[in-house]
Image (tube, rainbow, N blue to C red; front, side):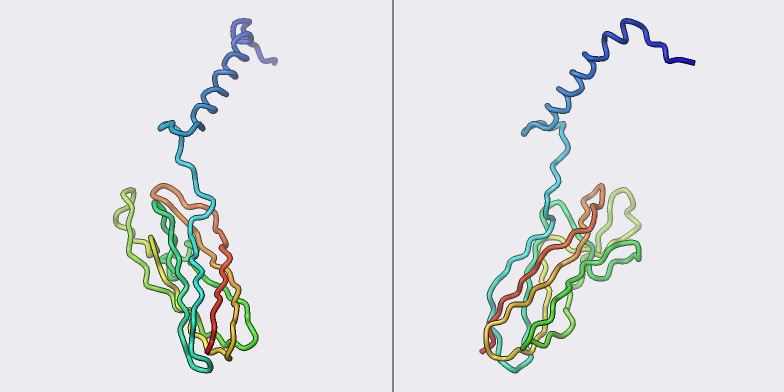
Amino acid sequence: MGLRISLATFLALPLMAMLQSRSVANAQQPGNLDAPAPKPKVFVQYAAEPQNVAAGKRSVLELHFRVVDGFHVNSHTPKSELLIPTQITLQPVTGVKAEPVEYPAGTSYSFSFDPTEKLDVYTGAFTVKLPVVADAGTHTVDGTLRYQACDHAACYPPKSLPVQVVFTAK
């Protein structure tokens, strides 16, 4: 059994393809309100700031993050095992003893499509604290913030954001 196409349909196919490609091109032009909003490449920004601490004494470093407007990330302790928590992994550094990271409390958030379910999320600015005891000198701690960003309609694949903490112990 073969596929039958009328001559009119056969001749109209190239025209339909051209119109469809024009429609796609127009939807991607800046300023077109019908086009979907572009998804940012990075949903969380890190503000690396040099810090000073007391040498040989327990001190707390602050890591400042900002979630891009219109998005949220799951907190460190999301309400469901299906959600990916925000988590920092740090590399060990000679002369620095790091204690477990202290995450802020999340904000309870619900969506219009299911107002009965509350999620525990970070939005806007949030600060993670890193307690350390460090030898005198300048230190650099490298790490990664792993998070999953969502907007009001969808969640996106998890991302990893490089984090570098530079501080001086005096």
